[in-house]
Length: 366
Image 1 (cartoon, rainbow, N blue to C red):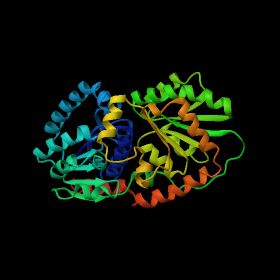
Image 2 (tube, helix red, strand yellow):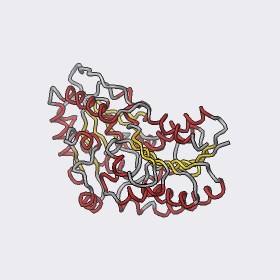
Image 3 (cartoon, rainbow, N blue to C red):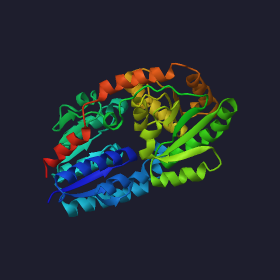
Image 4 (spheres, rainbow, N blue to C red):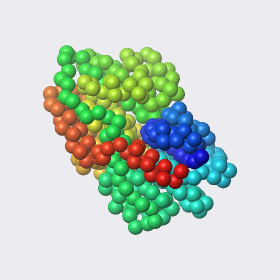
């Protein structure tokens, strides 16, 4: 009976991990999974060691608030790996924790597979060299990442971006009537959600003074859904689960998307969007100094141009957001342009089903 240790840090990684665990369990129901993760990986059949998705944060100062919990997770992980002796360890994203775990497992002579490796192309190359020496496989989601991880002991392969597999190819749909459908995507981390809602609560009344609109907000998890329902009780907003995203995106006028993987999903669906993010001011300054890329939004990074406006840090205000929203809603070709870019992004990132590719590599160690 094979045994797999899976380490996940956020909602997107939990979804990916759940898909991979499901595929591996189809190959062999006897395979055992122990995971740091969340709802999706647990439902797929993993024994949850710790719900790390709830600890997910971005930014130096934000991370400090959960440092004590991550120390606890690190201790639990070390103990579990030494006790359970997994055949292979699958790491998904979450580089702040998983790079350290990769080094630990390498010293224990446990094979390491890293899916969605650190974005070294955005933050510098030092971590690429470190990971390529202690991982056995590095499976990238962007084609340009392969070159960054070459030269070490790890086998490196581009398997395609999961979003191209999960999001159906966009079709243009012309909206009827004056009422605009706006999708609100506040993210998956509590701190970023509160920052997002602070602006959105001021923005919604401003927009409704100018035009008719209906708002749908997507909750990343059941826990987040309860938070959103409480916070938005006095606003004309419908709260829906993450799994309903694909049903609400087609025909929507616009999405206001918290920066992250979901911005790529929106772009692939052919929906115009504004990419927003508010972090601590010092975190914002530090990021601007360290980042090698001009943009923060994944669609803009992929296309190497600003196809979606970015409102980051102090630029993410209700008045600035209103101006950008009006620009898009007043542009009769915004939907057509979003569709054209969705096709170009898909062409750049699609390579079939990446979950099957990852599951195949993992199964070779079982």
